[in-house]
Image (cartoon, rainbow, N blue to C red; front, side, top):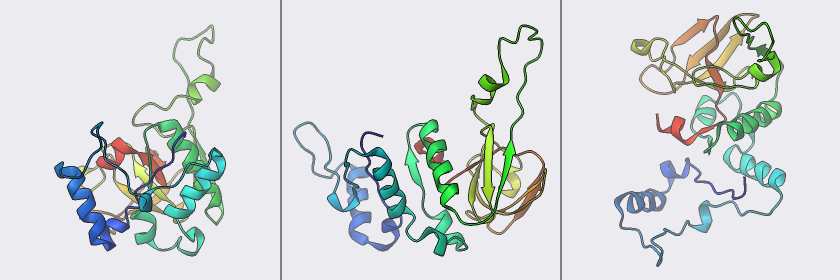
Length: 210
């Protein structure tokens, strides 16, 4: 994370100048320099200090101010996210965020194994490190009220699509109870024994575009 810059998405709802700025960029009318680059406004940047750990905590504090005071507020949880270009950064940020989130945690593990591998060319440690599309991370740590995102289409007619954001409402040993919190299916609950989900404090830019 060599450069940390952010656009605080809540501003797009509250500041007309910011909406106009984004529209000018999207429309190609914003002023550019001799290289054709748009200058990012200082008001929406987090300055890079050189200390990656400190910069990440600064970014988290700006995007999720007073996290634990607002953890029960669904609008607060689901109207903001940290975007990254890489899945490994997303996973790292989500693990930091869930550790900061108050409450008891429940941890689910993915069990990976190969078929017809008598020489053990693919040990479980290696398989557990893989994160193919549509599958959850090896370690899925959840707390009540935390945001998650679906990784595959389950029931599109009822809003359970790849990219749907939900909030965890409960869990048992093999069941997660979650509620849809965005879109036309807001408020619908579902329970499932398979867990094609990830935390969504942070997500990739591609996933956010869905």
